[in-house]
Each structure stands twice: as structure tokens, then as C-alpha cells.
Length: 146
Image 1 (cartoon, one colour):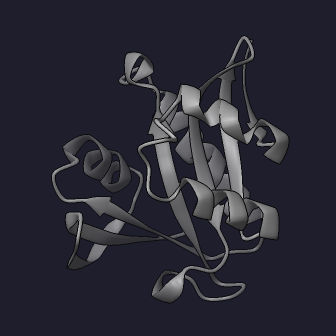
Image 2: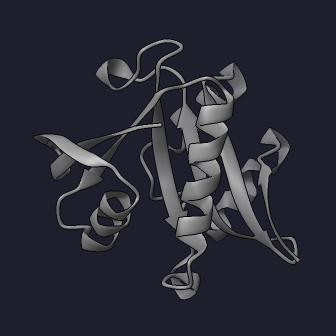
């Protein structure tokens, strides 16, 4: 059975099935954000296995405005399950969740060279409002009205 569920913080280590938690420099930060209630992670489960995830972050620098704009973070699908529509399902779920929470806008930062992600977000109505650069490379800041 496939379903999208809110992550129970006790199951956080199971996200390693989707992405390498040891290599990610933000693993501990994400955990603290979840614990503080600032990051809500939703997991795509297939027969109880963690296949994909996405998160809504309530406060993140200039990306968010309280009660108006929320940040979409870490939309990721396990490599062998990509290109099967799972990312789109997670994105649709998060967009509806943000709307249900009362937000009117959603933002995301996406690497410029991540063509699949840029295509998905554009197809779903996100628009680039700024091109930026950090220590990890060039990325687009994108926004969508809900």
C-alpha cells in the first residue's frame, strides 16, 4: 500500500532509506527543526518502506512570511523510484497541505542544474523570482501562489 504520512520524529533515522543522512551536512539541523515544530516532514511510504519525502518549513530566512508564505524543502525520491510520478504526488500533497494551513504562497530553492526538478516546479506553476549562488552552486528561488 502506498501512502503519504507525516513523519514521526522517532522514525527520522528511516529517512536514510531515501537519502544519505551521514553525508548530508543538514541532518542534525533538520532533526532540530522537526523537534521545534518548524519543519513538517511528509513521507511517501510503499509497503512501510520510506521511498520519498518532502517538508514544509514555517520559518526560513527571506523565503517565508508568517501566515502567508511557507517554504518547501527536501522534495526527494529514492533513486530507483524516480520518474514514476512519486515526486509529483508528494508535491501535490504538500501544496494542498500548505493551502489547508492557510498559506497563500510557497517558495523553494532548487539547483539550476537540477533540470527535472525545475521542470516539475515550472509545470506546477512555480516561477523563478531570483537566481542566486551559495557555497553549493547556482540555484533558483522559485515561488507559487496557492
